[in-house]
Image (cartoon, rainbow, N blue to C red; front, side):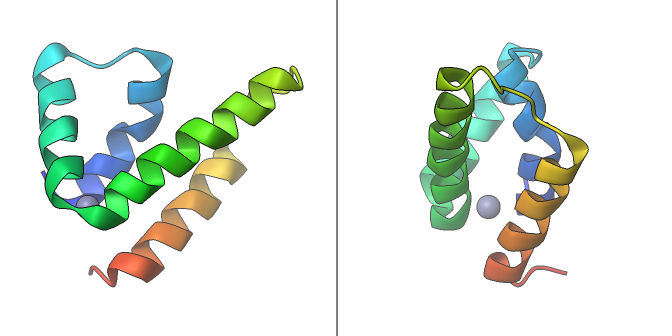
Length: 77
Ligand SMILES: [Zn+2]
């Protein structure tokens, strides 16, 4: 799994719409990729805040901002 793959599965992961195989891949990737591990924990915290405010919504804009921020960090092509 690459960082791009990870990001494309991130919303599925939090929606619980992810297969056990992919879940294992996500876990394996975040175990070896500090950037994505940070993204995962940050997203989890963000979602928690949104839920607390009853504004939970993984909007497209949010996903795009997240994607841009992570790709800038990872410097992946
Ligand atoms: Zn990664």
